[in-house]
Length: 105
View 1: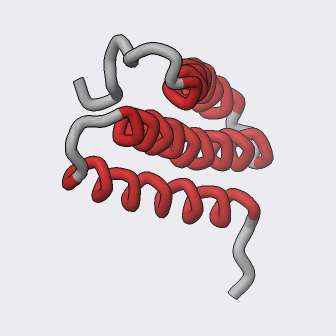
View 2 (view 1 turned 30 degrees about the vertical axis):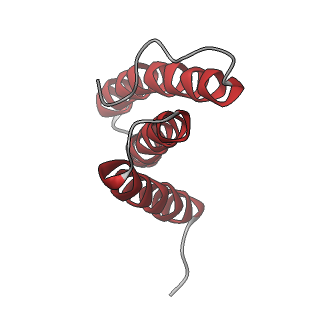
């Protein structure tokens, strides 16, 4: 069975999300937990975007213009979430100050 690039990204990001979720569930509050929370949140957005980009490309290839635009709008919205969570991950990695909020608050 050959996997597409979308399937590989989805499997990898889903794995990071589940592992991070389990670690956060059992870890006491700390700076490392905050980093893992934001890393898992970023992985969630990557998984969601991978699904929507794949669907948008399929809709475009089959000539469904409205579906491609609608799914493309979802890609833009979740892309914004990805950028925000990626920024929060980088900020949490800096560790200079206590994070103002965590991904689970």
